[in-house]
Image (tube, rainbow, N blue to C red; front, side, top):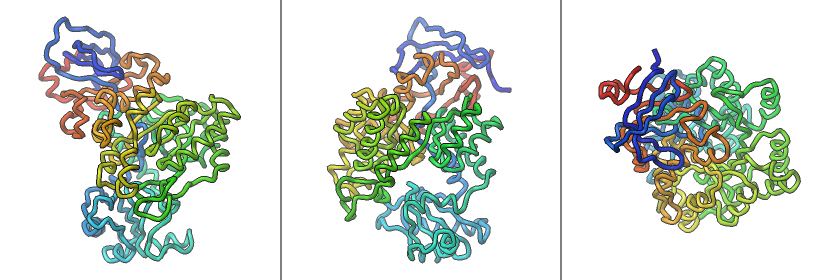
Amino acid sequence: MMLRDFTLRGVALQDFRGRDESLFDLTFRGGRLTRKKRLPELGQRNLFLTPGFNDAHIHLLHLGLSRQRCNLSGCGSLDEALETVAEFSRGGHTSGDILWAVNWDESHWADQRLPTREEIDRVVADSPVVMRRVCGHRAVLNTAAMQEAGRRWGALDPGGHLSEEQAMGLANLWPPTPEELEEAFLSAQDAAIAMGITRASEMGSHAALDTYLTLEERGLLKIDVKLFVAPERLEEVVRLRQEGRFTGPRLRLGGVKLYADGSVGARTAALRHPYEDAAHTGRLLYQDQDLFDMLDRCAREELPAAIHAIGDAAIDQVLHQLERIAQERGLEATRGVSIEHAEMVDTPMLDRIEALEIGLSMQPNFVERWGRPGGLYDRALGSQRCMAMNPFREVWDRKLPLVFGSDGMPMDPSMGLEGAVSHPMAEARLMSEEALSAYLGGRLAAAGYWDSEDWWAYGRGGGVLYGYDPLDLTSGDLSRVPVQGVLWCGEWVLEPSADLFRAGVVHAG
């Protein structure tokens, strides 16, 4: 039986604006807060209560599928990655079926070299194998996989290396089943809740729309999902919206996800000047007029665009086309639009972003993973450009609509918080309270996302219980601040531990 009537004793409240230094006893009836009693003296903090994290850029289905597949994220070398693929193949994989080996990151390997078709063949020859990089923008196939892919795509690179479009279209060649997608989501949802994530913006693949509609119909969503769909599903979601879908309580339509460029790791992010270690500037994925037409179509249908743009050339292109939209249709047509990642944004671009009244969704975990001196960004872009990336402080001080997400690399708010407060450039860093507010979705409160400024009074309000100070999450170690319980939409989606009841910190009834 789910506990719905209870009292939390000696609770410190941390919200979007900071911390109330008083302690409270909070009484809930039917899962809703009915009484907030301020304690007369400041005693021991038994619990800390915050809103749930808002992962503003995540691929939950992809994350869950990765848990079903051969996960190479922990491999420290190409040899280790290939041996892991071989072990996975020997460990019960059905011969002839597609073998996905995902999340490798050569930027942390000593030789920083990509695998080849021949190397994969040597460890698995009797099944098609896809080795896909952590960013999803680069992949390598073995011979068996190349033969299958070649029947759809024609001649491929002899070394098995796919183009960016091909790498990102692999799920169309070997689509997961509806059962696999449901299992993937449930696994990823449980992992999100265990980290205190109660809201997620799903940057959906082609199959995400059908999957989430089914999950909602079956009552399997425990967290709030804002779904962004692939552009080829735009007309369909307009029709579904007219039919009354996406009205909640757990699934809402966010808009349309677009890609303006690729990734730094794949050397496909579009730059104004060439890469430090490659004689090219990446590439834009849209011609100017095509991007304008797509953004204009989104504006006409009142579907905000979430536009992936990492490189400075891509951000500049996006801003130019949005400025055209605003000139023709007014600022109402650009409000609600967000630039996703925006890693190479600079001061003149921020002036334009501010004028357009658009938002930024940034991933501070990228700084922690790739943005340190000597890291991937340093090697690919040079020190000067690397250090100028992700200027969190300037974005924050301008009071722009800023949210943090993880892009699932990895889904770990503590790594993102650490990246935000320990940026290699001191002048780009946020304070712990500011970083936490951005990851909780605090700037969305000012933008009208919440019905009330007091998050616990919000209609579907809830919170995350911690036994230790959540500001310590900025250390980058989630294990130091374990989640003790998650209350969301009037029910426990992660019940408090028995120790909290024994200690009288959570009192039933």
